[in-house]
Each structure stands twice: as C-alpha cells, then as structure tokens.
Length: 136
View 1 (cartoon, one colour):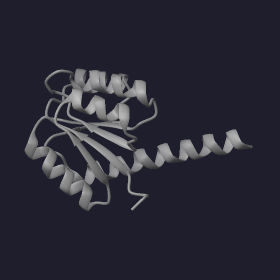
View 2 (tube, helix red, strand yellow):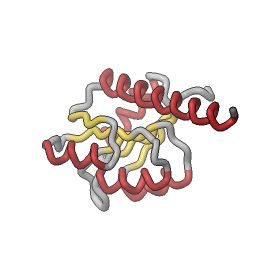
View 3 (tube, helix red, strand yellow):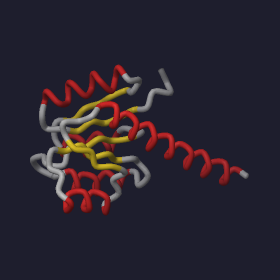
View 4 (cartoon, helix red, strand yellow):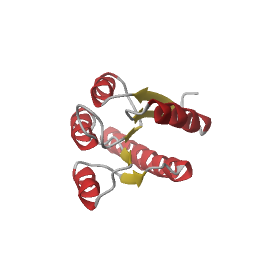
C-alpha cells in the first residue's frame, strides 16, 4: 500500500528488531531495520523514510550522534528514541538534536505507534502547508 508510513527501526539487538518489525508491520507501517548506526546512516542517506526509531546505546555511533547525522539528510524527519538508558542527560541530549520523543524500554508498542502516527501526521501537515504555500 502506497500510504503506509515507512519507518526505519534501528537497534543492535536482533530480537528487538525482529519483534518490532512484526509489531509495526502488523500496525500498518512499512518497516526497514538496521542493526547498527552505520547501517542506519547509509539507509537514511539513500532511502526516504517517514520516521525513524533509534536505540540510544549502540556500537559505533550512539543514537544522539546518529540523529545528528540523519538530520543532515532530512531536517524534518521525526526521530523517536526507544532505549533502556533513560537518564535526564540522555533525554535532553536527544531532544537537543531534534528527537520528538524518548521512550523507555521495554517498549510499550501502543505508545510507540501513537507517537509515530502523531509525528508523521504533523510532518505531513507541515509538508502539505509548505507545498501549498509555494504553489500559490
């Protein structure tokens, strides 16, 4: 289906990636997964996503560094963090680089789906407004 939001889910844990790909897919999202921040960065540079879900603590680049890199490709893309490491400093660092939300693991799938839909809807409205104001 063409209107399915395309999500990139990034986590270094294989079981988490597989479970969330199934859950999000079942909930109407088209899901791509990456097992590392470098793999995610390559995908973000070459594919179009409606939103990204990032773990914060991964090898190579952490989620904050990855978010910064992703925002160089698409400043408006919604980025949601899902991490077991939830300190005030982690949350503030993520928000500072443009995260829309920071959810704690274990992931509450209903909460994640709601946050994703809200972020994607807000982005689509901004893009629609931008395109309509440019053409008028």
